[in-house]
Image (cartoon, rainbow, N blue to C red; front, side, top):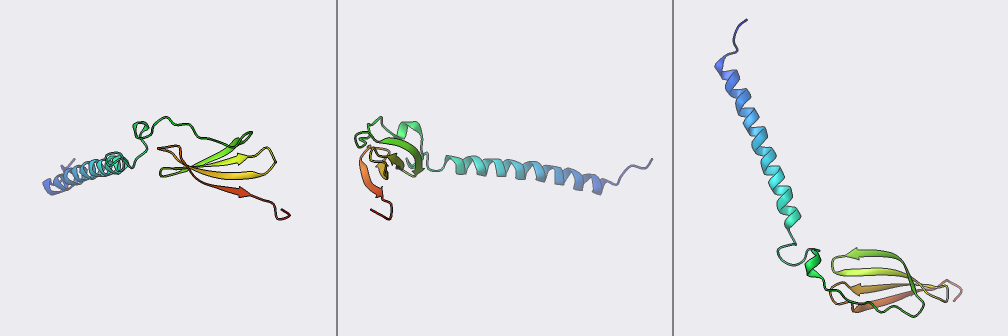
Length: 106
C-alpha cells in the first residue's frame, strides 16, 4: 500500500488544527457574550437585586409575571373580577405604573 504524499498529510493536519482553533474561538465568544451585562451591573445576577416587598392592592392575586431588564410586570386578578398589570422596579420594589384592564362595557 502506498503512503500518502507529505503534502496531503500536512493539509489534513492543518485543517484539523484549524477546526480545533476555530471551535475554541467560538466557545470563547459564547462564554464572553454570556458574561456581558454581568460585569457592568446590567445582568441579572442575584447579588444585583435586594430583597424588597411589593405592595399589591388588597385581595389581589398574581396570576402571571414577565421580566424585561429591571422591570417586572405582574398580571393581577383583582377582587372585583377585573385584571390589572402592575410594573415594578426589580431593584427597589417601587411600582412604576398600574394598568387596569376593563371590559368594553365598563
